[in-house]
Image (cartoon, rainbow, N blue to C red; front, top):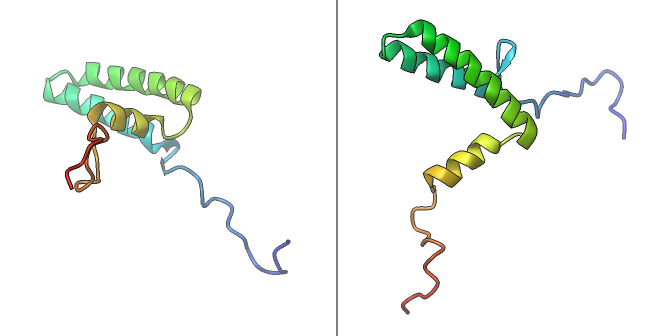
Length: 95
């Protein structure tokens, strides 16, 4: 089914969030490591390690695909938004 004449169809609705030319997750990695370097009074090392860690994260996310960071954080940090749901280890319930 084609779009009617004169109607623009948006094509970038599912694009990942970006900051300037970079993906938002890479910018978050660089800023986090740079901030830690600034707090420890080693801003140059923080910028260098931030760029190095962003390069590494870019390679890892290229291997595993989008959403790998969120899945990794959920798996290791155990953040659950279901406060009233019992844990999966509770198989027997009291009636």
